[in-house]
Image 1 (tube, rainbow, N blue to C red):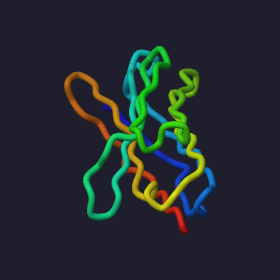
Image 2: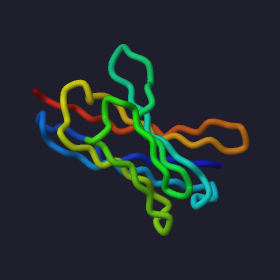
Image 3: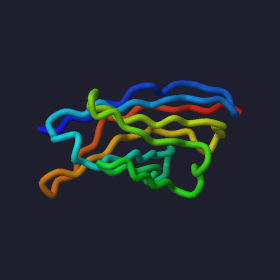
Length: 115
């Protein structure tokens, strides 16, 4: 069973930084692309960033230049380094993987940016 565990969220002032982590198990981590999504209160869950097995990345426009997704295959972990945070970045951040035509989500980690 695929398990994704996020950590690193918290309360930060606008303009600050945070680094989120997602530890994965139950899949062949080295070959799997993984993603970060986020969900603000009362809104849908939206795509944030994506990283392929070879390290190719993609970002939603609103975070380009501020967020960096990376992976450590030795630790079966992906990261989301977030900088110059603003109130619109607040929400629950989820790690996502797809395996054997099934979607897997972590429980999420809360990020709150105070203005």
